[in-house]
Structure formats: structure tokens, C-alpha cells
Length: 423
Image (cartoon, rainbow, N blue to C red; front, side, top):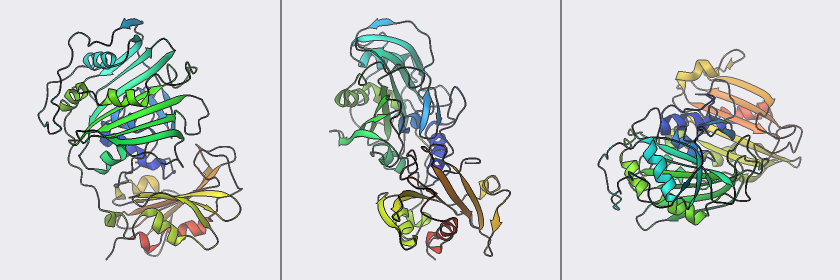
């Protein structure tokens, strides 16, 4: 739960990390920022693969940027594409496999990844098996095909079939938040869904480090995710090649290899997690639609999140003075963190609703960017938090002096009865 971070977009990450990978293990014990309990779980992540792995790359992530640490000091070794010693058992091709397979060690996961990559040299190998805590199995290597070193990682997890988490894993991210060159989705013959994105390590592309991601969700909820970079590490490593080593087709082949199904079979199925219906979150349709209906006159909506935005939504508005991003989170049952979020300076309205306000520089924003936030919680624990930036996207430079909405207007939106469930 967020206790210090007030960015409602970033609020959505921490719970997803805990749900997907147990305790999120990082070298620096950073979090992927306090994402909060948006029970609708909009996992539109650039960091999706890292979240599912629960520490897959040994990363310390801050906001939508982050630091990739490549642990391990193994020497280079020439490797062939043929399977290494003690190969993993081949999983059944049927998507209906439900048995629990034998545990798979971290060394086996590493060997499998190396065996499925084209011929090349490997170093900095690290991995985790299916029986190791606290998170999901993964393997990561620094791979050199002769054209420059590149970090490559792959993680395996399980999600509830048909859940919001499963849908988000193979949904292309929103370009308001994530910069990428291309993103495609496809369906394999066995019904598995695949998303491949050619993006960047940082949302604003400032480092030149490219990060390509591929995710696969099987009909039974097996989640295989691969990531690759055009550098030996995301941070403190120069770009070593123009592109990451694997093409989108090769990434798809890697994550769809049957060997990973055997690993996934050895991962415990996730607990049943009852997701709220949209009417539990808000009665008026999508968050962006409700937000749009509450905007003051004189502001024009120039962009917005999709109609399926459950729990979180945004609009980009322009009142003639420049673009301004406005975001809203709707979160039921947040009473357990009320004391953390609503401390000194909180005011209480006649109906018992608590209101906390924040006006501060945007931590992840560009030059001159500020974020204004109004955070509210009702007596039944329903939290509605709205924030506005003086820029059109979280990582852009300021386009105007202040956000398009005043604090008073934002409070009126956050405390509107339109966010309450019907009845």
C-alpha cells in the first residue's frame, strides 16, 4: 500500500507485484513504486515481466524507470543451441495440463534458456527454480551472438485464466505512459495469447537502451515472459548493439517453447482472487467516462484511456494553455491504510469523507513538471484519488505553468457521488 507516494498511476504497481511474485526481491530493496490495491488490477505495465517474475532480473525499480542489476560473475562459455545436460522434461502439448510436475532447479531453468537461444557466448548467469522462495522461477544471462553483449531474461509464472491480470499481460500498453516503437498481439494454434513490444528501458527513451518484451498466456494460465536489451545491463552499461539480439519472431518462438510449459506445471497455481465487478468500483461505466462527465466547462479532452479501464483511468485535457494529464484511481476497501494515507493536514467533510492534498514536483516528470493530487476516502473505505500534471504525459516536460484543473475542481471530482456504487 502506498504510504509516501501520491502518484495514483504508480499506486497501481505494488499490489500487483505482491500478487504475482510473492515478495518482490531486489538487490537494493526498492519497490516498483507504491501501486496500491486497485482491485480492478489494471496491469498495463512496461514492467509487466518484472512484476510477474517477482524479482526476475534482480532489479531495483523506481517508478516507470528503474535499474537492472545483473548479478553473477560466471565467465564466458561457448554454448550450442542443442539442449544442455539434464534437459527439462517436455511438457504435454495440450493446454489442459493440470498436474503438478516435479520441481525444476534454477540451474535447469538457466540451461533451458541457453539451449533455446541461438549459438553464442554466455556470461553473468543467474536463475531461480520452482521450489525457491520468495518468487517465481526465472533465468537471466548476458548473451553475445557476435554482434555485442545483451541481457536476456525469462520468467515463468501462473495466473488465473481469464483474469484481469491475464488479460493485461498480453495487452499493449498505453502510449501516454510507455514509449515504444511497435507492439503486436497474436493467438497461437493452441489458443495461447502473445504480446510482443519493442520499447525502451525508460519511458522517455532518454538512455537509448532498448528493451523488448514478449509475454505469453496459455488457456490454463501459464505465463511465460521474456525480456531483452541492446546492452549487457540496463544501468551502468553502455549500449552495445543497435538492436536487442532476438527478433519479435524469435522472441515468440522462445516463450512458446514447450520446455517452459513443464516449468510452469511445477509452479503452484495462484490462489483464487475474486476480482470486483465494474459496478463495485464505479457505477457509471469506465473511469475515464465518469471523469470526463465531471470535468469543468472549458477544457477539451484530447486523449483518454480505453472504455475497459476498471479502477484506473485518465484523460488528457487542453484548455487552450497546453496539455494536462488527469488521472483517477477508484479503490474500494482501503480502510486498512487510511492511517497511512490520511495524516496531518487531512480535512474531514460533513459526511465523514477525509481529504488530503499534495502539490509537489513530479518525481518522474520532465523539466518544470508538477503534480497536484487530491486523495479522498469515504467512511466505507472507498478511496478516490485524482492527480493532475502540467504536462500531457508523466515523463514529459511541462507544457504549462500549472495543471489545467484547480485543487478545488479536483476535490469536487473526487468527492462526486458518481464514484459510489449504485444503491
